[in-house]
Image (cartoon, rainbow, N blue to C red; front, side):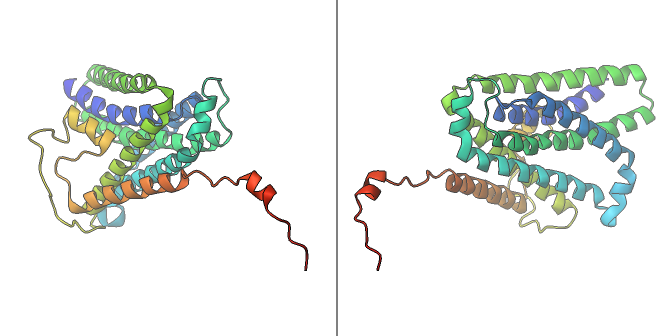
Length: 284
């Protein structure tokens, strides 16, 4: 049971941290809960299908099907998160003004919510498929139903508890800084996911390494440790990244920050007094 609980905890924690950041970033948008529940449900259904077809998927693309699927899921999440943070750069002030009135988020927030909360389904899909495959192998190995049930309960509750702690911690941020903080967290999350996608593509021999291992900080935080997992989701930490991972991280970071800066520029305001004072030209 301890082994089951540990693995389920680690996978649930990854999904829970992503869901917590997403929920905080969409604070105040009406019907958010329905999207979250729907995303989790779709993710679990997809994870079950992926697990059932794991053998077929792994055999695709010369045996690299699973890596390519993981990379595709992560890159889709990066695109959705990127769209959201760029959109928020333009509308954050308007959302903050309406936040005190329940359900008064701008209409465009709903479309942003639809795309962003699809990230919930993708997160649950990726982590859930790994959990289902692991539990299936454990069951085939002879572990009893009681051990599986107990490990699942402990792992899910532990991961959900830490994810909730992050969510409620974010809600304590003053509203004038709230969207800025959550946007930064989403940018770091997207950059980390892009780096992980690059690692999967490297494993599938679809990208050059550009340096197999730039450094190794496993002695401090290994990728499999609680701290390493948490930092990996929040800021894209990897104990021994390759060069292509670092390049992917940096490109995603620069593109999103540049897009936020460009979209968030204040529109030029015309001075009506100058327009009114301008002499009228007689038609020629």
